[in-house]
Amino acid sequence: MAIGSQYGFFLSDTDVENYNCVAVACSVCFYCADTSNTPGFTNCHACYATMGFQNVAKTNCSYAACQIASSGGSGSAPTKTNIVAFQNIDLLRRALEPMAFGSLLEKGNNSYLPTTTDILNRTRQQGTIEIGPYELAVESLGWTSTFYNTNPPGIFMVGIGQKVIQIAAEADTEITISIYAKHNSASTKPTATLRGQTITEETETVTAGNDTWQKLTFTAVTPDVGEVLELVLKSNEAGKLAYFSDIEVA
Image (spheres, rainbow, N blue to C red):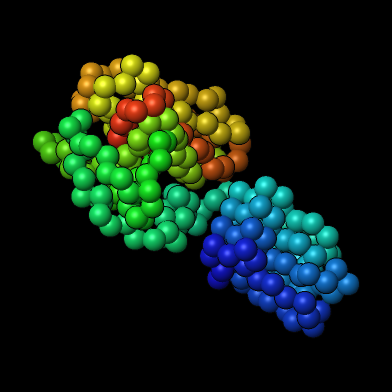
């Protein structure tokens, strides 16, 4: 299995046969640099990539959420399938990012003054985004009195900026996505937008007053095939703060 590589499987030997391989979140999942050679891949799956298969021989292979399924090579075309491996692809990307320290424990309140450096110790710029611990649940959290959003925020934005979270949705299945958001004193309030290839785009705007958490909820059905939906979180005013937390998918 290959995860998060430029090339998931990079081969050049025609005589090499590969079985039951999986490549996820790669630029090219299965690749051969020499177009005169076509190493064979059987029962292999490409998921969430720019290119699934390039210049390789394919037998009974499949792909999901690839911009281009295959190019060059030989054998049968890969079959498009629904995404079943990862409920939230963004969690996979998060596993590949550096661990956050420092402002990981900053409280989500309107009295907070941004420090001069971010959680990776880089000089902070207007429009920067910090990501702390946030949970993704597939069912109700069941917390009746204390919510996670009363503690350090999941996503903290300074000024104008956006964060895109990708969420896998199964075919012909209703999906509900919710998130809590708030701002410190913005006139142009933060927004959240759910978009995808097969759904009608939805946008929710924070209408609550300063330093008040508000729950934003989206419900959609992907009609034909499984796809990756995008939840776009935006802070829309320079010099203001926005917080997003308690992401839930059901």
